[in-house]
Amino acid sequence: GQYYVNHRWLGGTLTNWNTIQSRIKRLKDLKKMSEDGTFDILPKKEAAQLTKQMEKLEKFLGGIEDMPRIPDAVFIVDPRKERIAVKEAQKLNIPIVAMVDTNADPDEIDVKIPSNDDAIRAVRLITSKMADAIIEANQGEENDQVTEETFGKKDEKVDSIEDIVEAVEGNNGHKDAE
Image (cartoon, rainbow, N blue to C red; front, side, top):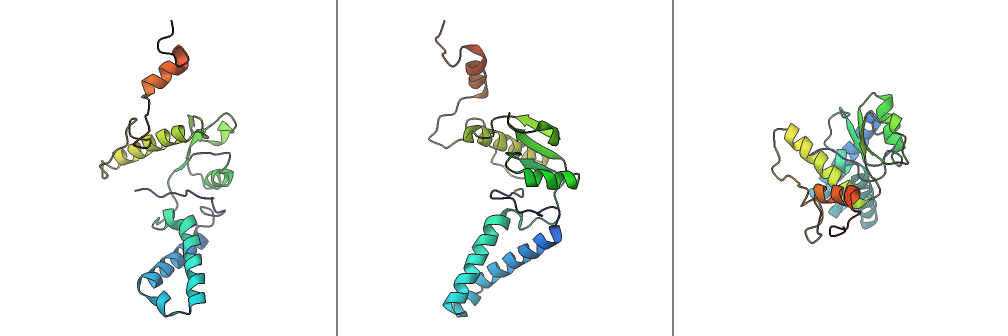
């Protein structure tokens, strides 16, 4: 898989990479302590504090735990909300691919994907297509591709792109309208 941040962007994640690496090392150390039974021999209160610290680090850094260096490009779902990530990528001249809604400044983004970044189905569709493109670029190292029909929940009916375009451009969603 690829590296990701799906909670609040920590300031300095890219621009202060050395410090972030030290926090990632701490996360790995805490995981190792948890797995080898060190937490079991510690006092209950201390073990609880370390567990809480490990969970917090996992929440914010778990997706970049194995990232060896800063990325060559970043994909951002909501550049307006994640303005810190945008500024850091700009500062380091890292190309930015982003879903740009009408409320965002498109001039800050290198590759713009015009879309509604507030609608969960739109976010799912575009992120799944981005994932497919990454998998394809990696010569299909991962086999499970997400399709237009499977990007939503299994019990959720998903329209094809053609149906959505027809609904928007054609007759405002009424197929039998004359």
